[in-house]
Length: 436
Image (cartoon, rainbow, N blue to C red; front, side, top):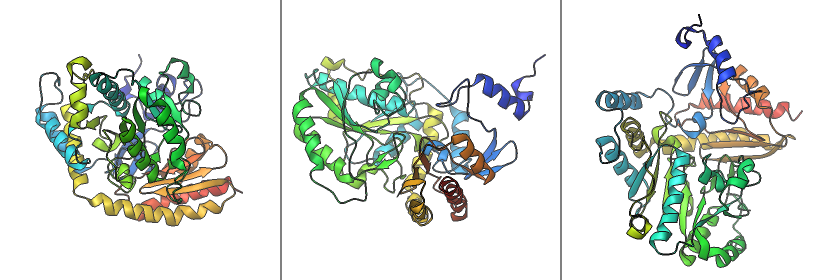
């Protein structure tokens, strides 16, 4: 008789996992090693094999307040005793109302219509639908393509994939099945370079030639995440906002990765002092407690989308839209963000990352070091052996998940300096080991 999973040892569970469970971007026939987690608290992840690891990833940008936070735990416990889920069609509840109210207060002025989605990818799908329905409502249905920059990443669902990098991104296998969107070269100037007005030239040409069929521009403001961890000049975003206004396009800012302080600003678009027409947030929205995202837009977009000629309603309605349990945790996470402690925390992380990572720029195996807010990137000259690198990191008591040539971290905001030093020391050891 086969024992149930609840009575199997963690080693047996790992064996089952390897044979039956898919993990993100991992082969089913030749999977990367997987480590069994027992518990997590603060910035520490405890493995069932006994190791305690300082988390350098915030579980892919999400766990900004760390793990097992008493305030977020209390919000979840209190809500689950009242109502874990109810359909959002025709019904509403206090957690959704509170979440929307707090989100509106945090986002730029004028963004005050909220769609609560399931995940970051879904929020991008919804934002794209909003943009397309907007122009149907404005009686210009020919404006039905998106413009974006190469090197971007917006999620794994089909509309989201269509605005990811079509050649060098993770979704090139599906390019023949995706909508045909318009792409321009990735921003040329980094965040720290002097601005060159010539950067506007290619953008203006595309707008002049294509604006009649373009519905919106979508991009990650200032920081391109999974597409390459690049930080580009804020003036590029200012130019896009100006061109969208001049030629009649909507601007969608995907702040799923950068929202809620990660870049050093509450939203990365604040570096450019612009307001998008549509804003996508996710990941840190619940501080990693459960999946939730939101799309926030303005009254003009909401009115056009709701026009009778556009169908009379936004054509999207997930089963778990407005899930009360997730909304309650998200509302409490936003309350913590609104208290402002993240500003000093992120500034301290940025300073320490600059001090401890910038010297690695001199190593032969390192191409570039980039630090912005609570984001630290060491771009290597050669692809990283992920399995070997993670084995080293676990031996050093840290959790880092590289990809491609990128050794990068984005730790929880409450990480202590000593903990962060352990993470950066492990990064330095790996970088030196491949530079010898």
